[in-house]
Image (tube, rainbow, N blue to C red; front, side, top):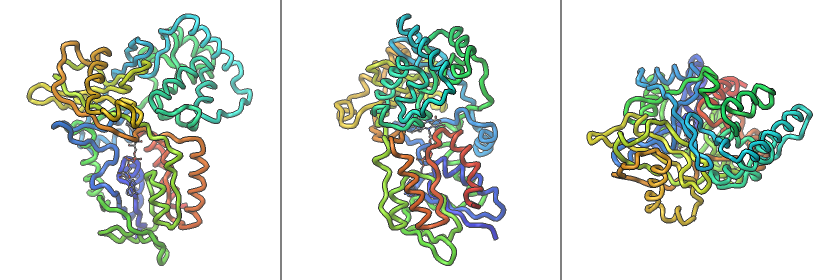
Length: 451
Ligand SMILES: Cc1cc2nc3c(=O)[nH]c(=O)nc-3n(C[C@H](O)[C@H](O)[C@H](O)COP(=O)(O)OP(=O)(O)OC[C@H]3O[C@@H](n4cnc5c(N)ncnc54)[C@H](O)[C@@H]3O)c2cc1C
């Protein structure tokens, strides 16, 4: 008789952990989620007759073995994403590069950045203290000038000062590398020193193929929902029991097992694997007060879906806009890469637009599409003659979740209390963010449950 596991959270993290656990001989797995659908944030919603992802969601830069699984789950119905990324900064567009490209700055500013980088390179490895916050990290990587520019970009996208978030927030941003010169000069600077090689970037074409990672997307015309539907069935076919739309009513320890009750199910499990960040709910179930909400910054966005004729949409994957005062951050040709063009030739782009809660634009979001559409035209995302034939603008109060200073200590406190209250409940680290990181982190779940 194998072990019984309950995985709480049917998002991608829960999927990855379950994928590892079904490999354990005799294991019986129950997936529990309070929402009635599978996939969490990965599951697209129907908007104006199209399936729309809540942001740019794809299996980008994933390891081969995960890509093989996604392809198997999809019965081969996947398309390769051939990234055509762009970015805008300082009023200039850079093709083939999605991070901020500072190369349009005045020559004296670029020389200062280069000089600051060389000083940092000379000091690298001499035991400087670890930066305490993201602003410190940006300056330690890129110098005062470029670090300051990146901190400003960070504030305008994430609506929080970089000195208030943990340095590891960097891994969720598009600020992980610096490019401030043209590609040949960047390549020469990178080649001159290992520190500079690690922090600087050149455009992909100039670097050649940099890794063996794969980028794919479901090809059933339902956007990421296509994967969510198939992944649920794929797991059920392998014996996983789905308990969706179920609030958890209690967790108690009884007869060497953990008894978890929802309205409709009572499950006696050997381990409960908690794969979401709702510390408050888990603490409440185990009888103590705890909440990490105040240690997380949520990044509010207006999310716009703009419909126009497919042949008026530029041939691109996504554009990241770092222009100061920009209304849009990431705009994607989501309708095109998800294969959704209706009988009239219409498709859509999506725009994630950083917008502070209660700002004028937030409060008047029904009118925001005018300015967003004009910005799409100005950035060349849709052609000048394109007509907006439909739109929807949604308010998303919390998209990219960033750990504020003190979050790690708080989580350690939580883990310690959890260990005292109930052994066998495993709170998964929710820091791994991109699908590749979540998948790689899931490779340790079998060790965790058997510890
Ligand atoms: C806007 C945006 C765009 C992104 N784009 C990409 C991308 O292109 N590529 C990439 O690799 N990564 C991307 N990411 C990151 C990636 O999507 C997420 O890290 C990942 O999908 C998170 O999966 P998850 O299972 O942890 O969370 P979720 O998908 O949020 O799933 C958590 C699940 O837990 C359930 N749950 C929560 N609390 C409880 C409770 N108390 N009881 C029961 N169930 C509960 C929820 O209902 C939900 O179903 C993006 C993230 C965002 C925010």
